[in-house]
Image (cartoon, rainbow, N blue to C red; front, side):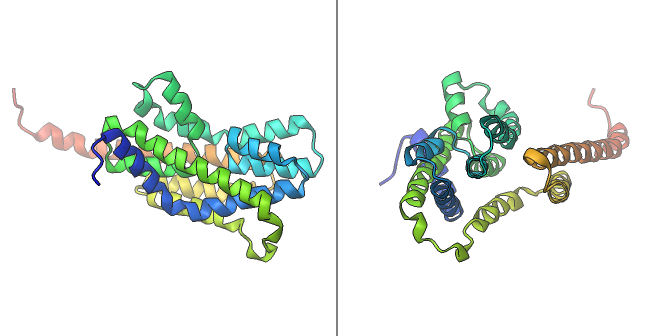
Amino acid sequence: MKIKNPRLCAFLRGARGTLPLLPGVVPFGLIYGVAARAAHLPPLLTQAMSSIVFAGSAQLAVVQLVAAGAPALALVLTAAILNLRHVLYSASLAPVLRPVSARLKALVAYLLTDESYGVISARLRAGLAEAGRVPYMLGSGVTLWSIWQASTLAGLLIGAEIPSAWSLDFTATLTFIALAVPLLADRASVCCAAVAAIASVLLLHAPLKLGLVAATVAGVLVGLAVELLVARRFGAIAGPRASKLPSAL
């Protein structure tokens, strides 16, 4: 049956475009549920974190800090620092969302994750009609949110039955790699990814997970610098050629 509503079509395309990432998201949610159970967090609080915070890396870090007996201030700061990358995501999508109402912006911001940003960015680059952009984002975000809630609950219920030898935590890393590789389409993005990767390894043991933020900032700065250099170079080449063209006036 053909769906005639263009917004609903865009929403379903966003959901469908996110489906290939779910095999990496589900184990991540299971691991969080298992870790929260091992840290003796109440099941209701564990599920509430998935619903309200909705940020896997921050949730896992908080659970680990709870298990280690860290103070509340450390939990809040760690979660905030780990989620600073979402500021960059928001800045990237801000021009696209400029005409959208504040309510829809808030909803898109709440549903924005690493995975959905990768899906949305790739689709925007491929071309997406303005009217379908927000529904597409919502389709991707709602799909990920629903699966994250279900996988967290599954981790709480059956987590004890999952063998540790399966190393399910590595699937999250594979998911992020699968998201990043298709976006490396030019020199700037390749340099950005390379510098960020090297910096993240060198700063792996930085306190309060600040290495992640530092690596992100370093990658962005290098990417911007390379983009400016390439633009100037092509501008310098095109300049003399343009001056030789006959004037239309």
